[in-house]
Image (cartoon, rainbow, N blue to C red):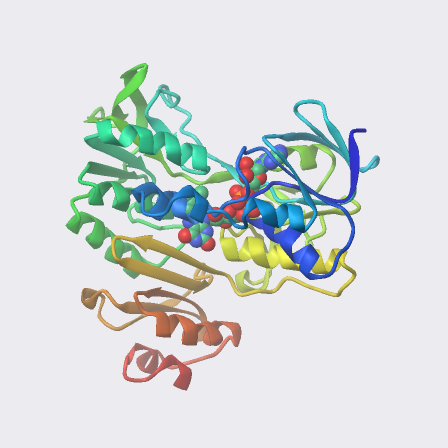
Length: 406
Ligand SMILES: Cc1cc2nc3c(=O)[nH]c(=O)nc-3n(C[C@H](O)[C@H](O)[C@H](O)COP(=O)(O)OP(=O)(O)OC[C@H]3O[C@@H](n4cnc5c(N)ncnc54)[C@H](O)[C@@H]3O)c2cc1C
């Protein structure tokens, strides 16, 4: 065994970094190691499809903490190392280079790998996914030679990338398999609003489109659609979701499937093994206690705080209200709660003013809000979601009534 630590954190992203920070905040004095497969110090991922991609935020400003922080807090970093096996009985993890680390407690915070297209040409040069800084750097290096780009997927990452490219003057075609944008995460009114915004910025959105293959000779020259049309381009960005990176844990016997199953204290079914962030499949109160994974910074941070407190001997349970943000053009979307399964969606304010909210109801209760350039609604609406408040749709729709009053 190479080294043993009281806590080993696998994954040096948002959740992993926050777990180490929170452990020290909780006065945990044991040894901590963080093993991450990226070469970089822990950094913020959201700007990769926003200010970092536009060149407005340099790498140094992405860092979650400066290098000195980890030294001062005595968090030993093993970067550029991928953990490939977990031995739950021996309490060890082994990296691809053969190094083995012993642990007292293990925190699995590995996020997920971007899903790739399964078709011919998916690995041609110029075809990108956006998950890591290295991914974004590769795209940015190619951008000056790109006139036309195809974005596959009308979720947040695809839309943010489309907005950056359109603003940079590229011709953008966005392919979405379903009949509206953001179909998995938002109601129709929000989908139609963002569709209008992207079209107004020149993005050519094609619904119901399926990719047959990527064409090119070494480098991408176009995307062939299922109907035979070839959309010419010099770059393809694929934003079709992630696969949680949990194979080593599942192989070690942890329960799960689409993620690793955890309880409200983020414990997996393996002794002394916790999981947090994008890869953690947890029963969420705001999803009617159904098991879900949340892919957001807030969730990674909140679960990290729970695990740190539990390991430090405190009583802590995860129950935070989900929230998320997305920036496209000059629009700031903030989402609180989960709108899945809503039976009513009330538009508050006029979308044409580009400042409005959509309040989602289920059985009369407020379950979520999407707020576009509407920070006050977001802050006040959050309380409605947390408190499972009931409110008259006509009052919700009236912008002269503050959400606080409801
Ligand atoms: C482009 C982009 C934009 C986003 N925008 C937003 C946003 O606006 N708002 C928001 O709330 N969320 C956003 N997200 C989502 C958010 O970044 C994630 O939810 C968050 O990073 C999850 O944290 P995590 O710790 O679970 O995973 P990550 O931050 O992905 O960290 C996991 C780390 O573990 C590493 N790893 C994986 N497997 C292993 C292994 N076997 N051994 C060692 N290391 C391993 C990974 O390489 C990675 O470095 C965005 C994500 C992306 C990619």
